[in-house]
Amino acid sequence: GAGVSQTPSNKVTEKGKYVELRCDPISGHTALYWYRQSLGQGPEFLIYFQGTGAADDSGLPNDRFFAVRPEGSVSTLKIQRTERGDSAVYLCASSLTSVPSTDTQYFGPGTRLTVL
Amino acid sequence: GNSVTQMEGPVTLSEEAFLTINCTYTATGYPSLFWYVQYPGEGLQLLLKATKADDKGSNKGFEATYRKETTSFHLEKGSVQVSDSAVYFCALSDQQGAQKLVFGQGTRLTINP
Image 1: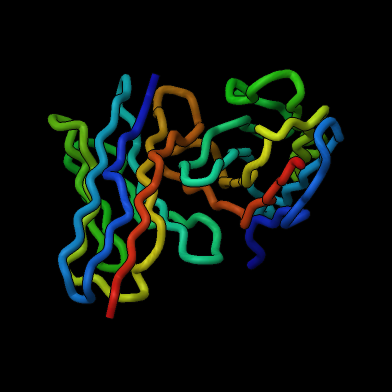
Image 2: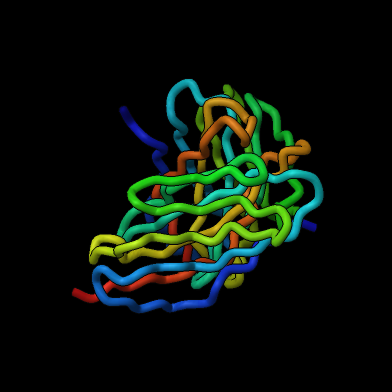
């Protein structure tokens, strides 16, 4: 079956612009996660949705970052007034439930964001 | 807060060599532990996991044992292949409520024929 998909695969933007990154989770998965991976580092947690609501947004670096999941499926990560330091690969993952001991997070291929 | 420390890379081995990648963690409570792998040009994939102390996760010839007394989850494989070349990430998830994964910085492994 289809895995987690993310669009676009690459996004180049200019400092100060607004960007949206999209994630399509595996069908039927209720939990959705966003991570950010800088070059040479492990992924860092940004936000986690259970259904339509953000259950944990403690990883969002500041109020320029926002994410939604209005119908409990597709999610969009929105970044306002982009800065060069936002350049990274943004990863989305989904899991059937949100119980880490019995469930697996499946990752998408990521969106590489470059802010010039 | 919770954290994961991994053996720094890169690691280069010859085919059929024995592999160990060290991973230690700091966490409150009883986390679940994971190894994820990222093959060239591909996304992160779960390699193996362990959910409680003394559990052993295994997959594709790789093994890791959850050691609470040493707060470690070292990855091992008895005989590596060229196809094992990838970046390996150790991670934990707090079972107390937070669903996020906390990752180590990754270890790049290259296997030469």
